[in-house]
Image (cartoon, rainbow, N blue to C red; front, top):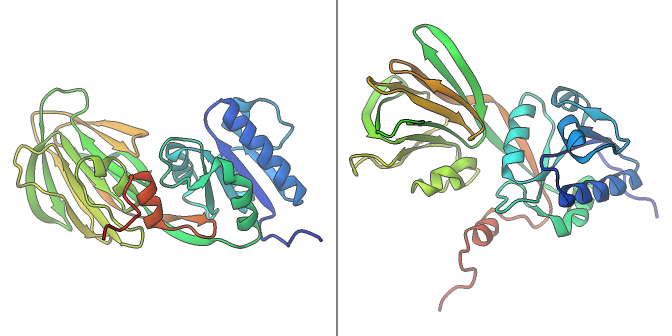
Amino acid sequence: MDAPHSEFKTVALIGKYQSPEIAESLSGLVAFLRSRDINVVLEEATAAAVGNTGLPVANYDEIGKRADLAVVIGGDGTMLNTARRLAEYVVPLVGVNQGRLGFMTDIARESMIEGMTAIIEGRYQREQRFLLAAEVMRASNRVFYALALNDVVVNKGDTGRMIELELKVDGEFIYILRADGMIISTATGSTAYALSANGPILHPSVAGIAIVPLCPHALSNRPITISDRSKLEIGLLPLHDARVHCDGQAHFDVRAGDIVKVRRSRHSITLLHPPGYSYFAMLREKLHWSSTPRH
């Protein structure tokens, strides 16, 4: 019997680490996709890491224009980088977990072919995740801009002392925070750095942005969740400089007097999950929650 017709004509494969596991997974996935008459392209840095495979090589812009699906093989860090690079395109993403936790790369390596079979045959769950847009204003000039799928963090950088931040939401003064910094998190990022700072876990369907202080001097400064339509302004007060991070990957040194503006980006990403995917089951597994009720 012929394989079912797939809506995905061209699939891009993206990995990061040069390791036997990544190369082995890529090789197996390439063979599988080719057996289904699907065109395969390899992201250029991935191609450089795994060596000559004979596959067509493409950068992220070319992948965004050519691919119907991008498969990310690695951990959540690889997925975060890919999500930002492909955010302006409508290419859906699938994650195969080769890392430690894998909140977004939810297909296990050992069940990769089974999961990919279901997805290319159209049996999947589609999920939208929004990104944050962050910019740093110095006087009237924008000196930095980046997207973040997980979080935007303003912290003390290399200094050993607390910094002072003035927070405004939609132009309204909220408070002055004396702390190691502040995390501005999406629902996607609520299980990342924000969680370790006692921030709330937000279900991906919650259209909210979490504001999580980092080691605040006053214990009354608690995490708060606001609407995803809100616009935040974080002013760095004298005398200390700081640093802004987007997904822990893009960063910029900010000075006293700079304003970090954060809002929901107009871009979003689409994640495809195999049948049976459950966000709560994922939390139970990754966070080691008990799945057996106590009677």
